[in-house]
Length: 439
Ligand SMILES: *[C@@H]1O[C@H](CO)[C@@H](O)[C@H](O)[C@H]1NC(C)=O
Ligand SMILES: *[C@@H]1O[C@H](CO)[C@@H](O)[C@H](O)[C@H]1NC(C)=O
Ligand SMILES: *[C@@H]1O[C@H](CO)[C@@H](O)[C@H](O)[C@H]1NC(C)=O
Ligand SMILES: [Fe+2]
Image 1 (cartoon, rainbow, N blue to C red):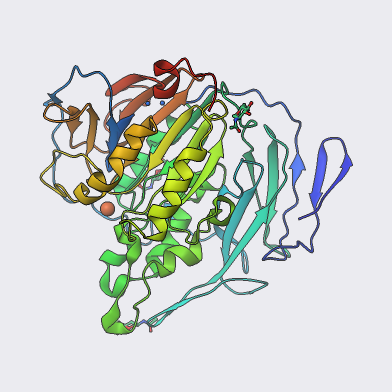
Image 2 (cartoon, rainbow, N blue to C red; image 1 turned 90 degrees about the horizontal axis):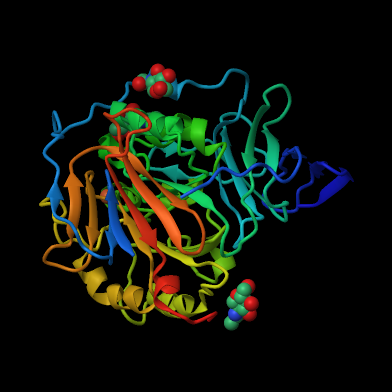
């Protein structure tokens, strides 16, 4: 897009946007040099309710928390007439607004939304007897760093306004806080998780989403309306801060017996990611840089053996990470490499056998995963690798302080907003172990 800088702090996105959409994004830059809040997290494997974080760190562990036990195995869905699913008022009013990083270094944002009545330039898909609404994706590039941007989507009377803050420029000692959410769904517990994340005094600036979004596939005929309700539910957060997407088993979402044989169809139409910018051929695995972090998103549900595109890409990607520029090397995947829970036990084992050696070799600081719907943090290899586990729901935060340290905390839904049920300091694996100045 072309940004015309009319005067110092005001930019407008031209309406004949060069990209996929005739995108009414009126961007106003409300002053640069925003005050930064500190952000946050090291080689850990973390499973967060549904996330597993693994750590290859010094071990003091083995806690299986007894202070929490889950009341029932099943979370109740929020009914379709719940407030969180309400349609915004007005004809053709845009809904399900969500943003994600739109380039490799954080100066781009992909803004996506859905309109029910009027197309514009859009993406749609059909799924058995469901036709998606009009899905709009708009990539804004070359934004200033550290800037609050207001954007407006929709046409005519039905426009809606949101804002986001661009990240600081990529650099080694830039503090930045990531939130970690996964396996979210749309139950009452999902709403509690999101509310806790929003109310956490450690303010996450960007969510690393470890997969399993709407769980539409668990409804009869994979009820695609549940992608729409989920989009409306999470809008209250993802319209204001980017969620870095990772597809999981519930996004495979195919139904061959009804002629729906294309895996990941709803997910890939609705959630765009900047995969081309990192040289991959699939939106299911890619990398971005953000502040002081280099984030590699892998697909547990795509082929990953030797000679597969994903493997070949990763082998080229890992040596490219310059730890003098991005000290924190984070891997996000869905299926944990380590988990001591019976549920999903060893599902990540073949990927662990393939990839763990490279994570160790390249000093990956932390691996975030989901899938198990329970919390676990591991340090060090077996047999005592489970440092903390309990079947709680919640979210986590990873606050990068500088190139050496980051602080990770697990926040359970049943606790007060500022309570940390589990926390650990990370010491950057590259910087702590080497006297190497740069790579
Ligand atoms: C979801 O959480 C929000 C924020 O706490 C609350 O306002 C809303 O009523 C909740 N909705 C449901 C259906 O639980
Ligand atoms: C789709 O088909 C299912 C059963 O085949 C039916 O119950 C449902 O009402 C149909 N939906 C639409 C929108 O036609
Ligand atoms: C790594 O990044 C540092 C800091 O930006 C830079 O000085 C150095 O040249 C980079 N190394 C390579 C191999 O690009
Ligand atoms: Fe899963």
